[in-house]
Length: 470
Image (cartoon, rainbow, N blue to C red; front, top):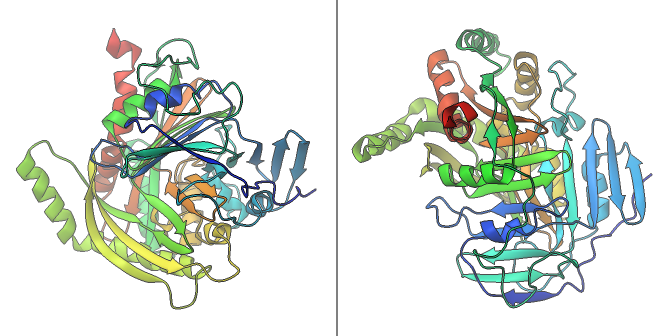
């Protein structure tokens, strides 16, 4: 059964300006006791920041996809459907609507799209094990949100916060010293060693298989990742606060769901739509940051000059030009920037920017379907790379290399690539990191690159280790 359409009606959405406060992390504590609380975090003040924070909770509806079925739950009841989950989401959202102001989010959908949601759009078989019980899509439809603009130093309440939210509606967000509502008892602690699903030796064997595929002409590049896991207890949000300090990033997020918590510090934008202008900013090419300023500058220069990294980047840029072309006006897709070096807390990255114009009659969700999952974290050609990943990585990726973000009722969309992310499910926490393998890659260098990318995540877990503390 399909849900009724247009349930996200924002035609009468109110907009109230609030007192600006520079840090949203303590404001968000007041929402943690509510279901499906989400903090889209720009990393303000870190030096690696975006512009807007979006805080909300208690959605009007939820859409949860597990395998071939999506459950749509609201006050009106529960519907279950085997239809395309993105079409179901489009039906719930309805058509884009003019909304007050020029804010990025004016009510609409916020949530997560796991890498494995791609199995609904591409035929991959089922080789890798699904051992994490977290849905492929977890999306809430939110009638309200706090939106904080750090560039203009202004803040708004969009819509009306539900009764009992515990935050003043006007004129101010809660002060940093305001009372916090605890979500869980006890500090965040890691109570087991952190284990990886690849050893250096098993990674080298998988690497050799990828290179054989490349020699045989099956593919040009494959993004191979390893997963880290540990047993934990305590409050996930305190772990997220540690992560946002160690590894601040412009597309960070904390998303608390009944199925688990996502703690993300992603530096990578997957897809943005604003006024039908489309942008993707793939990352391909990495060097670790160094403490010595001169040595760190040389790392940047080496990355900028690396023929290998540039070649990898171009492969993915070409893939994404093709993916954007599925939903963009013919001739509108362009590479506006190529090989920018961007520096973050732990690494330098080589980043390019591809833009386009959403074609008439196309919805941002058409763009998402045509591009998902992102080419920067699969390889080229995409489908064959995904098949090789599925055969070589011991388990499915879950949220890793999927997306987190929003689709607003005003037609705007902004999604990250869910890299540099932790997933807490029950008493276990997971982290991932990988890199693109090409013909001239080195197994030792690629393995080390995955450790460099995971450094911030592993530092959070190491700091919370019970054995380290004692």
